[in-house]
Length: 191
Image 1 (cartoon, helix red, strand yellow):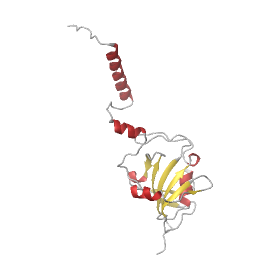
Image 2 (image 1 turned 90 degrees about the vertical axis):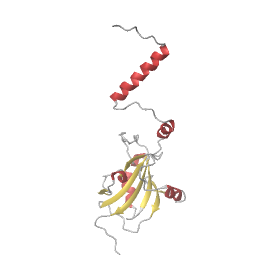
Image 3 (image 1 turned 60 degrees about the horizontal axis):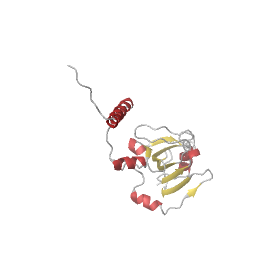
Image 4 (image 1 turned 30 degrees about the vertical axis):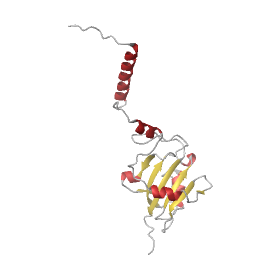
């Protein structure tokens, strides 16, 4: 049994063609074609962070930071101390245990030790992390918390590609790190 061909206007044909192209592209990319709420789309386009991600600086902290003076180093790194620690500062080459939340300037989080629920342990000043993080941690005291405004050359000179749940960081783009220096293994404070 043969069916009569469907007749449709060129506009309907264009819509159908677009629908199939979106589905094929979506399948190729492993995406499903879902309708996104317009407010969510606007928030994503603005690069706003999802509200459910853990942060080192909550709303009250953000408000307090407005009144904290900005420190600028010779390299161009800028920072504001959220809390000054009472422990020792890490010597170059020592291991440090820290928590961090890394953001693009819009505030969208692209990496976080809090999400991994694990302290980040590395040797400070030895090039294991970006230059701005190394420099910012070397002048902190254990128990301290700081917001680092890291210029592009001290951040990711080659950029950082996007990944699921992580925005792309363009080469030489500035980034912001909230970091807390939890402790320095081997350098316990004297009580």
